Length: 69
Image 1 (cartoon, rainbow, N blue to C red):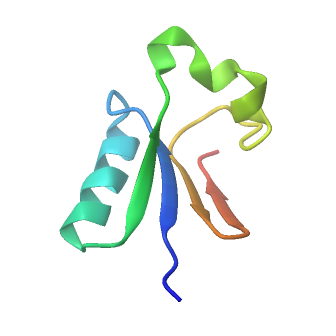
Image 2: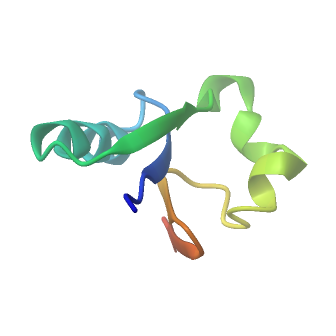
C-alpha cells in the first residue's frame, strides 16, 4: 500500500514552493492542492477547517496533518 502526501500550496509562497520542489526532487508520491492567497482562498471555511491558522503549506498524510503556524 503506497501512501500519497497531499500538500496544499500557492507558488507565491516561498515555503510552499520549497515543499513542492522538495517533493519533486526526492520523488515523493504526492498530490498538490492549489489555493490562491491573493484571492483570499486561505480565509474560506473549507480551508480554515483544515488549518485554523490560515497559512500554507499544509501537509496531509492520511490522518497526520502538518500545519504552518
